[in-house]
Image (cartoon, rainbow, N blue to C red; front, side):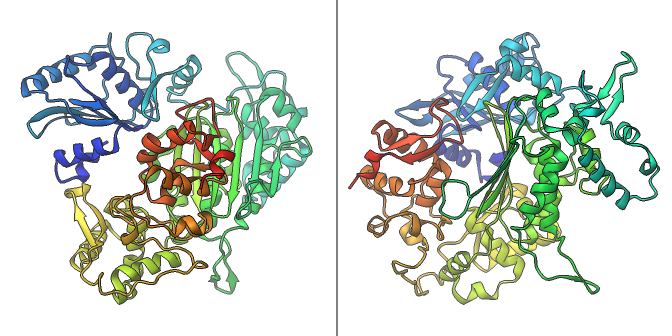
Length: 630
């Protein structure tokens, strides 16, 4: 992680870190009483085994705020030597994954500090543990804390280290050809023959085809033969699947606008053969029916298989191919008016950076992947994430979001169904820049819209959205800066671009005041500095979720009681901290540290997950006491 490259100086970067406080990616160590060996080792292990992070030595906490500790240059020199000796000692740490460039010494108003940037370890390197016992020294990051991994989590990391990873090749003892659903295999064969009529496997009998697909195999060493996990999952009868995997379940839920309870549900209830092939046939067309289908012709034939349809298909196949089926959790698909969510058990085998960059392919279940590839609905070129991102880009939808969660381990892919170029975004651009916003090219308009919804943009981010070369994107960004629409900060590849909310024409533009029946458009004048002066993209939701007597109050900084009124009105249904922060234009960390725990303690809110206090996906809902607040 080289986030500091986005800032003009290390001083600015440390300012930003201390303002945001400790998170899942930042850990402060005071260091005044000596080098904090144990704490640094644990955090190094936890960052390396999750998504990486930054350790800052030389910062102390007081009353929930963070300040420079006051270390000297001599302290820092001694600490740097101690750190490198520790990280290179296999008796203290299993592996050093850092380079010299990952450790930086800095100075802040006369106070010295060390900044250690820990990357995510590759699957071949994990687990990174302290001491000599992986089962007793492996940590992972959850929210802002380091937690000792349980035995099964360590065992999973160890099992996924091997280069010949193939979790679905395992022969399932006691399962035979009779456990295959004949209709699933017949329908699959038909698709395969239609696509590849001259393929040599097309004339094989059913058992021969299953052998080619690695759905049925013989172990040459032991002589054991039978259905593999891949064959059972892809073509098996449902009763047979749950005999092998008792916790196997598919759960599709569909929600309509404003409804808390699902309006449609399809799940493995025993009434249908819920193997992966039948899940693919039944659920993918249903999901694709919700996508926009622009009128496009190839010759005289209408093309309904657009890039976004291909992207959704790729996401669906990934959902089937990458789970850890040996886990005790289920496969979940949630369709809401604004998003589609795929949630499956396991961990990511590549980093988030590699996912968004594309070109990386590590498959947990390669036999299942091959089966989908042979009927033309999957690829093995590492281009899956590119296909998803390009499809969403063409539709002008927001960037897909992928998240790893723990306890239990899950990977969640969120595919937003909201356009970046919404009417609210266009209205906001007009409020800021007047007629100039209407003269922007499509690429410029998309860039500005993303700067609103994502607070800032960069060249690397825009490469996922614009069909332009990196150099052309640089030219576009410089042009928007020259015209006064964007402001650049940082240097080199770390440069980021934010809206210029002090545009020369800003004061001269007539602002429209929305009526009670209009959707509320949040402007810089009513943010009250609560979100760093950058617009919050909540135009389409706040007016309907917050009662009119509350929404009509001034948006200046509120006291605790006023904030409680807004939150309980918004949280009539379960909401995440992030949703609350976006809707109210408050920093998520501020709500987490200063508001939500107090509201729960006062009885105004209740938590959905009452067992895991640090669940990053925690949701909140107003209690009866909260609803009575006046």
